[in-house]
Image 1 (tube, rainbow, N blue to C red):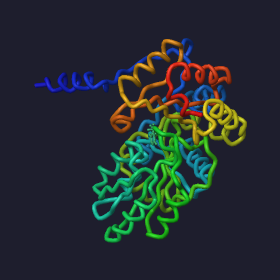
Image 2: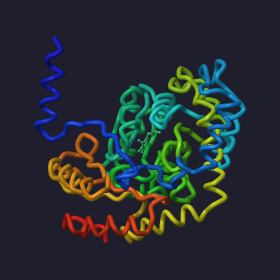
Image 3: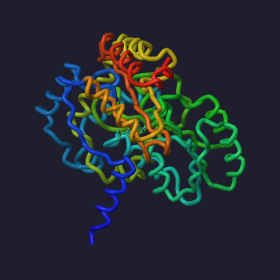
Image 4: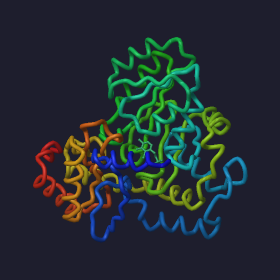
Length: 359
Ligand SMILES: Cc1ncc(COP(=O)(O)O)c(C=O)c1O
């Protein structure tokens, strides 16, 4: 009866698309594919905050926020996030994936349309599908195509535009000013997914709904939505991934609180990150640098060659990226040393002509 499992797995192997978990030892390999952009997951005060919170509040929250899982740490973190994002209020979710799922399904239903960039994150796509709203996709960053879609969408009760701010597999930036102008002109809501921007890029976000995650530059775990007080009260009542899921452990809240304080108080961390980014690529727009190889097998072979030389850069294949666009997704962090980044640059130039595209 379960023969289809083996058939599907064999097909994935044949196509070079089979995924396997790996254990990477940071003592033997320099990791260049983590989203811990500021190195805060290993920062001693962040770790200490988690330890102290575990001693005081225990290891888990015990229930969802609306039952008995709420704590002063959750509320303090939401207040901190709201201030950080310069919004009235914020709501925590257990992951960024769940923040997208909860917000989009609460804001859009059958009479509505959600309009998204072709390269938006999987969690946005899944949320749109689950919402029952009409899903419309515009070509990557194509404002003219988006405008055409908006013109055709007057019949929908609500129009929700959702975009990654930093695209997770390409590292490029959404045209936020243009998106905001169109949203206003066509009476649409604009939601941004700031997962790879928070703590990395300082910018004025024009979105009505700001989604972010604490799992990348903030160094721990959890998602959030920030916006007006009404938006947050609405999500607290309607977002199913918030209502029906256990609250984040207090340890995670405490770590994130301290991490956000460090991001604000120590701009030199972000400066170090950008200095490292510039060492590898003068034209990068974020900490994510794709090296598109094309073929999935060739991409994985290159990743393996780097691994043999002590560098872990994961290969990204379909369906995460479109067919024929397999790539190494290189990420830089503030925790890398100048020497490590330079070493990787030299090695990449040795191993693939594609490295020339970084400069
Ligand atoms: C753009 C984007 N949105 C959302 C998520 C989901 O965030 P999390 O890992 O916190 O669930 C990710 C990360 O995988 C992401 O890259």
